Length: 148
Length: 117
Image 1 (tube, helix red, strand yellow):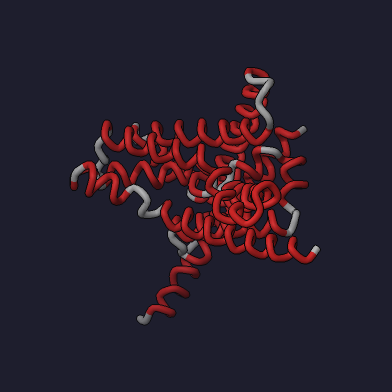
Image 2 (cartoon, chains in turn brown, red):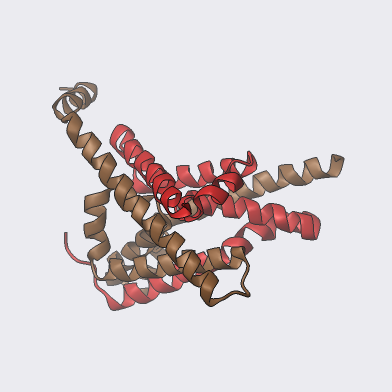
């Protein structure tokens, strides 16, 4: 059986309902994480009335990132991830989880050459691509701005 | 009302990610990268800000918010500082999140050991 036949075979035996149920789980868990973010947003606005929305957003993201790192350390985030799939990867908590789990995984190779060197194994491309795309857009924006 | 939209839109973005995982067998790294680029494109096309008004954390919590924030910060810094803003804007806007992710990852990685799966 070659690769393509195998892929078709897998497609045939994967039940349709399984796809829908995994989409629903991703939807619910992902939605709940966003709901939590919105709740934190309101809470910080109440606590820190002098902060503007940009600063509050940074605080909300930081809080979610911190909690996801702790939950990853305790092994709870992996369980959520097993249940939710994309629902735990796409939110910013998934970004944090990818850093923390790499940090833990490579701890045995030492703190500097293990943890520090490998922390961004998955999250690194996100930052590299994000910064590169943002700079490219910025360059376009700057050039267009020169002529307007 | 914003809570409902945050849940619905945020959930939909995550379900889209799950759909990509199921249909393409992409790794988490590729999913994250794609959504960052998607967020950046949405910000450039001016779709992101109106969505943020409706759904709040529903669009900023998914990693799309990271891409959008990078572009938004870059544009704002260009308006303020000109050419230099192209280089400083993105990471300045996202500095808190990245710094917290690094420090909490480091500390948790030093305290907890990886569990065998």
